[in-house]
Every structure is written in structure tokens, then in C-alpha cells.
Length: 353
Image (cartoon, rainbow, N blue to C red; front, side):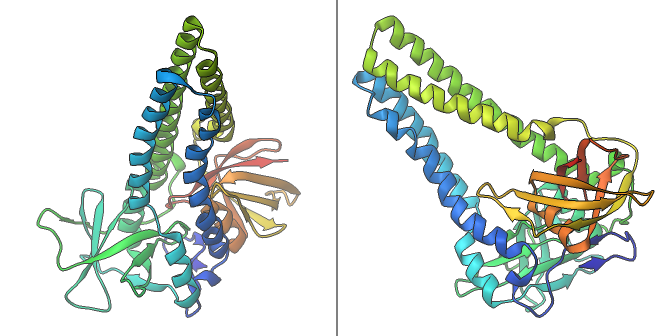
């Protein structure tokens, strides 16, 4: 846990001189994601295999071939860009995170990639790909936590208060097009002026819209194929496509219910900090999202319950470690609103009972 003299915002951070897995919630996240990655790769590919038994003839083979042609490259791309959770888990059990403070002129950026000199060598630089919110947070804080290398030379980076790690590699020098990132003052500002929060929110919304656009496209294609099968009176093919259509509709409805709250506008005004005492450690599900129940103290001294479901595990971990929750805007009883951490790429929904 760290208390910045500038921002006065306490956040979860790795424990010094202890294995990385000792950090609260981090071990649970590693365990959940190590199994969940295989689940979320296998299930979308395996479930359509059941109705494949019903498909027959040319019409039945075409949708399956198209599905595989689109899914296999997507999975390969995802595996190449994803975190190797098994390797990260093994490294986290053996090695600690090491804190690194960057000098004022020690951070460079080239597009989505950032560069800084590694502390264990004078001739090598770290290169890591970060989303915009993480780059803005790093530019202001100038601090990172490093893990590794392992026996294969793999290294990982983590930002203060953010539980998700990033892969990092070593390069001999900074590319010619990289631009030095000047230090930015870090202070608590209203949510609508928080550039890190705004960038993080925009990324979440883009991902949600892209996923639903893809789901709707698949649904439309299946509906067209179903209509064609009915017109042609191809019973076997029609049954298979009907099952596929139902499968896609169920996942679409489930997805809308899970994330529709994140598409609502963010409250304006100010951050409200409240004491929050968790009942138990956060629970990480197979989706990589967290659940947490707490008691919170209101300004008048009263206590009530809050519940966070399907939220970024970083938000739950920060609350668990600091016993503080930052609400966007003015909270009121019975509301469901947003919570986050000022100046950090952390955001989620919270329900007040």
C-alpha cells in the first residue's frame, strides 16, 4: 500500500522483499486467469461443435468453415498478445516485484509503446505496449513495479494500483521516433478532468461496442442462413443453424446484462472518499472479474452495505488493501453508480444497499 505525498491516494502495491504472489488478490487473479484463458478459448470453439452433428450438406459445411476461418486467426492473435499466465504464476511464486522510479527525462513513447532504462544494466532498455490510460498514469507517477526475468528471459510490468500485468521485453536502444515524455503533475481532480480515467473509460466502451458489433454480425448471418434453410426446407441444416442461433442469442443477452451498466454516463462533480470495510477477500471468477461486499461509513457516521459484482479486480483489490472506496460524484442510498481510483486506470460499478 502506498501513500503519495502529491495525490494523497492510497492504492494497492506489491509487498517489498516478498514473492509477488503475496500481494493481496494478485495470487487469486493468477489462479483464475490461468484456468480461464483455456476456458474462454475452448468454449467458443467447442460449443458450436455440438450442433455441427446436425449440419449436413453444403449449407451445413459453409457456416462451420466460415466460423473456423474467423475464429482460429483471432485465437492465434490473442494468444500471441496475451499474458502467459502459467509462466507468470511460476515466476510470481519465486521472485518479488522490484520498484523502479524513473528520472524526469527517463521515459520515452513511440505510439503505444513506452521505453525506459532497466536498472540492472546500462546498455538495455525496457519496451512495453501500454494502453493510453496506462501511459498517462505512468507519465504522471514515473514509477513501475518489475517482475523477472525468468529462465526464458520473460519480464513483466505492473503499475501502482492496477492489478493487470503487462509483458515487457529488452531492447538495445530507444527507436529514433520515440519522444521523451515530460513529467506531469499528479493531483486529484474532478472525474471529468481526470485524463487517466477518461482514457480508461473510452477504452472500455470501445471494447464493449466492438464485441457487441461482432456478436450482432454473427447473429444476423445465422438468421439469414436459418431463413434460407427454412425456404429450402433443409431440416437437418435448419436444426443445426437454429441451435447455433440460440447459442449466439443466449451469449448476446448474457453479455448485455453483464456490461450494460458500464455504458452509462459517468457522474460529474467530485470524488467522494468513504471508509469501506470488506467482509471477506475479493472473489475472482472465471471471467477475470471480481466480486466484493463491504460496509461503508457515510459522512454522518452511519454505516451501510455496498456490493461490487463483475468489476475490475484492481478496484476490489484497492478497496480491500486500503479500506477506502472512491465514488464518482455524490453517493446516495439505494444507488448503483461508479467507483474508481483518482489518477489510475481503475473503474467499476458499485451498488449501495
